[in-house]
Length: 151
Image (cartoon, rainbow, N blue to C red):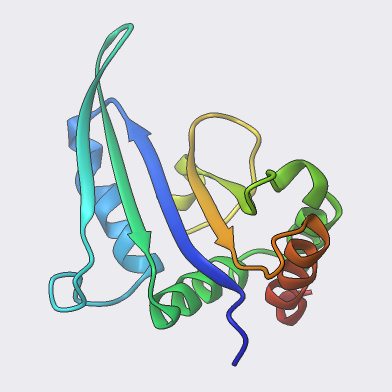
């Protein structure tokens, strides 16, 4: 089986300590596994923002199994129109290092509603695509293979 991606990173910022358990629930909803048993960890950092402490929660997956589960959880809950929109916007969503960016609205996702957004109040998803040779065309080909089942 051809390797289409290397890793996926989910990151979210939250200023309210009370909402952190809800965010953990979203991570477990997206990847319904025993994190400890599967050697997965949600990295929690406290950052100093302009108006107080901001919590940064990050989950990174590198195994093919975890990556596949996470992709399926994300793309199967988005509408076909949103997946098509991502494909149309692939030029602006992909950087020169092969990282494909997605933003899901945080307030909606906390209610298990998957919705793309351009706002900063979101779950940031970075998908590091695999490609050899590492060219934009190869990244786009592999991205197409990932998105195709959901179009």
